[in-house]
Length: 103
Image 1: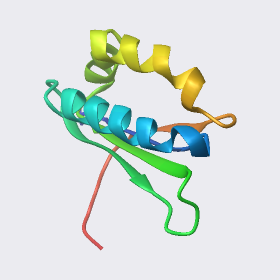
Image 2: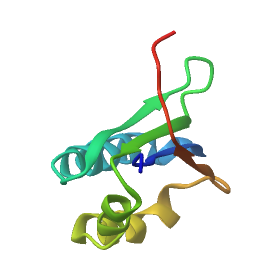
Image 3: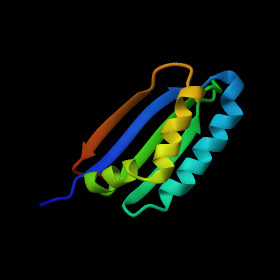
């Protein structure tokens, strides 16, 4: 049986007056998450045309690793801080990937 990788991709719009806070919180979240077992990649990036639009990309070895991530103290703290940072709804998708190959 082939293991299925989990990829999370999305975008969030942050309040302009809270952008610096959002960057600081996102960097702290990414650093803590990358140290988790099963995390292959976790990063936030910004849109060149819209400085208040952030993108999220996560790659997990398994659904179990992602579930453990949701139960971490840093995830609980991150979720608590989000409402004060966001300028609207988030768009986040979960993908279950069976294979990957270079382009």
